[in-house]
Length: 171
Image (cartoon, rainbow, N blue to C red):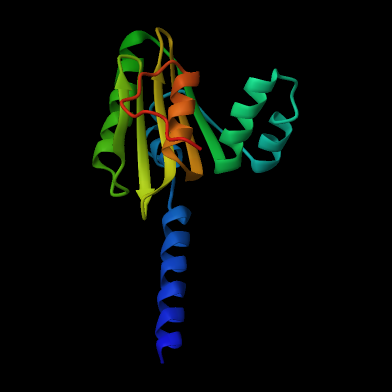
């Protein structure tokens, strides 16, 4: 009887984890809400393409950092838009509103004047990382899904010169 209950509990948790990672990600939701209003494009980087990226020539430090990122990431979506400053501000604010009021419960991980990092967790595992980036004429969302650590987020934030409130966790 105990084994039956334990098996049922394990299957239920596995189903919940699959459901949590099977929901619409931030980039898809943002495009669904905003694609008709603005000139935005969304590119999905497949696992196969991530494997090819890891083969590009780089120094050993860059290669190690890239391998750490790619080992925890299942997919990457990039939403990009080029427009005037006013439109870019609107696009950025809409993305912040979506993260704040989404039913998927994104939490702010780090923020500065040109970048905000949000994370979505499932059972204390980060299953989605969303970076909102803005420049003078460009707006970008980097949306990573997978099973990620806070150390990875610190590493990605450092690569983009974002000041994170968290310190890296030793690997």
